[in-house]
Image 1 (cartoon, rainbow, N blue to C red):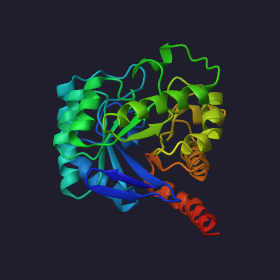
Image 2 (tube, helix red, strand yellow):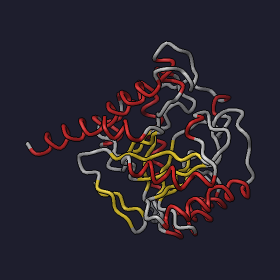
Image 3 (tube, one colour):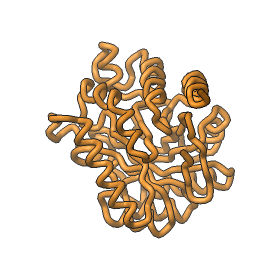
Amino acid sequence: MLLQLRDRVIDVTNRTAVMGILNVSDDSPIAFSRVGLDEARVRALQLASEGAEIIDVGAHSTRSNARVLTPEEEAARDVPVIEALVAEGLVVSVDTWTPSVARAAAQAGVHLLNDVTGLTDPAMVEVAAEFGLPACVMHMRGRPQHHREVDQHFEDVNAEVRDFLLDRAHFLAERGVTAWLDPGFAFGKSADDNLALLEGLPGLVAMGHPVLISASRKGFLAELLGRGDTQDAPGLLEATLAFNVLAANAGVHVVRVHDVGPMVDALAVVNALRAQAAER
């Protein structure tokens, strides 16, 4: 599969690429991933040197009780960083659910919109269509920063996630927008739900759309380790690597992570295995 990102193409045929997380927020729960505007360019270049093929820039934390930014505050953090990274020749996505921020990012040269609300705001769809940008749509019940407040019982989590994502992909395709699918690990989902989604990834991949997952250092991994639902528990790097290797073996096209170097090394093994299997 070829991922078309504005004027750039990434070949993910029989392999999984890495998206590196660049947090320009001041309250991301993963403290080491936070950078100020002055540090962002250097960190992004480091992530790229470690093997990140896309840099995902985000300023607005989705965690419960995170600080709410105005669109102006969010854009003031995102846009200068996007401009600097595009000037360096990097492929850049913007992690936002705010249409005015997405528009400013598009004008700054961003290659991908990454919207945890699934482009359910018509104004976000307009931005993607106007600038010819692909969009990553994620499944989530409720709203960012409030997804834990909604009913989290699923009759069939894979069916709900698949149906929502495919419906959004069809809607966007009719408007000329290519959709990437993100099942939304940890967003309003229990540890068991997340395991069920992991098991169901081959079916989602088989739908023919690019699939991105974002499970890096999330609290449900700490639950699986028996260490509570916290994002500062020991062992989260190792759990992230294991989870994403299993996802890569299921065929996902992109994994979004904080720890790029170790993830690239881990994926080298599964990517080699997939490439060898494809040649048989």
